[in-house]
Image (cartoon, rainbow over all chains, first blue to last red; front, top):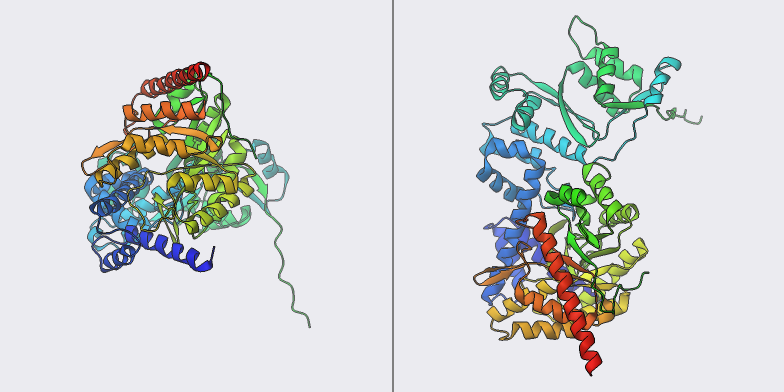
Amino acid sequence: MNTQALQALGAQQQALLQALLAQPGSTDAHACEERLAGFIDASQPQTARGLAVYRANGHAMAERALRSAYPVVAQLIGVDNFALLARDLWHQHPPLRGDLAQWGGALPGFLQHNAQLADVPYLSDVACTEWALHTATGAADVVPDPGSFARLAQEAPEGLALTLAPGTAVVCSAYPVASLIGAHLDATPRLDETAQRLRDGQGEHALVWRQGHRPRLQRIDPSASALVQALLAGADLPQALKAACGATHSANAFDFSAWLHAAVADAVVTGVHSLPPRVKPQKPSP
Amino acid sequence: MTAPVHRLSAAAPQVGIGWRHPHYAALLEQQPALDFIEVHSENFFAPGGAALAVLREGREHYPVSLHGVGLSLGSAAGIDPWHLDQLARLVKTIEPVRVSDHASFARGAGLHAADLLPVPMSHAALTILCANVNQVQDRLQRTIAVENLSAYMRWREADMDEPTFLNALAQRTGCQLLVDVNNIYVNALNAQRRSVTTDPLGDCMRWLDAVQPRHVAEVHLAGHVHCGDIVIDDHGSRVHEAVWTLYSHAVRRWGAVPTLIEWDTDLPDFQVLLDEAARARSTAQRSLEAAALQVANA
């Protein structure tokens, strides 16, 4: 088989993909369809119908995949708007992989730059938190190591770190994101309380993790947020504690012991591990 | 490489159902008499969590057929290494009875349409498909089965018909074929709407006759929907009578090939799937007995 024939096949496949994924009605879409017409029998009415079937299937998959990852965004903007949003995202940020669970991560950024949704400025942060929950759903399982907590009493804290649950993430928002999601998914807190927090301009730090197979979301204070973010960034315990204490302006110092007790009970923290030794920068040779 | 699975006696074939999310609990609670269950591989690519745990639980009770929809075996842009890595990990975890995907493409330069788009029945497409199937089989260290499509558009270029194309694929790569009887019928009905044929059922029987029996590893049966000017393979209803007729024909020719009832949209009560599976088993049994009688009387 000559290379030219294989390249031609690649070109015709790319023409179909671009014709299906270009924004409908755009100049680009017309150009793509003209390119594709050279490879197919465009005069046959069923050809146009068939292409419409593939486009409709793409839109249905986009809606389904996005609704599965962003149930609260879907509730907040309504079914019809969400369908249009899914279609727009499908065409402007098409999938890169054959696993649709991987598609949709571009939505928070897409929402942030969408002028039509400027009156719901918190939508992007809600989406960001929902994507973290979606990611946590399938994160690699971790076997808890309760015996390792004894190391906290036996060893110097330098070089020790807390092992966090699968999918742990923190979203810091100028809006009450954890409350917004909780209110829409399981009425905790109530919608009227959430609306009041929104009116009061309350920001929230949202902690996302997976407890067993259940994705969890919790509003946390700035100190706990700083602690978890430091751990996620690879800090050891003294560094993480320093970050936690530096994040509070409250007269009450951060109570690490109380936080750890609750975090272990909720399986946010599953054990203690050693960080790999840091490589000291070498002095340049004289 | 494993050999194609065939039962050439009059015994009923292995019959399975597609196991989808709304039926996870029902299957595990009822544990009905099924020979295997089928899942879409991509739904279990996540390295952990509830989905993989439930599949492991299902695997404790049934052999699992891993059926992919996103490998893009016919893509001139090649196989996505990430996708193949996830599939290899899942295969290692689940130890499936069969691994399959489609004779289609969806992957191009920097994008993936997440659909089953047809490849032309050309020498170039066959070359690409063979190379990609070989790559997957080498990586998985096992034979895969490749499924024929329902296609809603046709490329101008065609060097051969579909059975010839698929036979050549199996011959060159040692892969198996997964024959979706409903897809053949949907294509024939759409050809009738284009006035290309006046005998869709006869065309389908000739299609089935043209496939080499030794290549066939699994048969899929599903429903389709008539949408006026086009027929769509939506997997959203019971298997149509014409497709049962074709299934009988296929079984008489191929023997007791493992058979799957696929239902992916508008999922019915779990019992409806089990009823369809029972019908597949009895239809195959009758067809095999009739074939055996025919041979005895010859």
